[in-house]
Image (cartoon, rainbow, N blue to C red; front, side):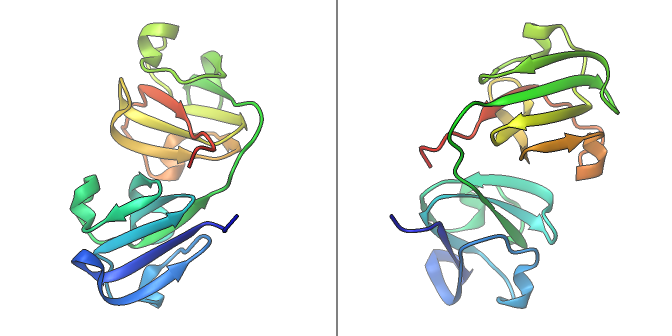
Length: 176
């Protein structure tokens, strides 16, 4: 079994200089002056339009992405994060307010509409207990997304998501 691998290219359609990446990369500009296409050979990655895993982020599984607009990105890829394989259970506790305050619920499964299902008006903090998750701005896994790995998130603002309502959640399964 090969390890995870993503190959970034300076130009669209896999042209120009390339950079092979097998783990996290906080600043792509160390390797390429720009990054306009990529190919995921193995594994799953998040790519970001700002350095240090900030800005808008996108989930990429195995496949070819001939330009960054093909998956909704509006600017060049600036950083990327490898999503490790996870086997076992998935658990995330979501809270209506920051600092784990207010009504809360534990999810162990995908949820296409958090507000409807759990009567929460918002999701401003969470604790990822097990597994890797994608949370989305809109119900039914649409809109901007945020990748959450195990850990405590006291405020969505801390990870660059002020004013963004998180409305649906999906487990990142190891079928990557």
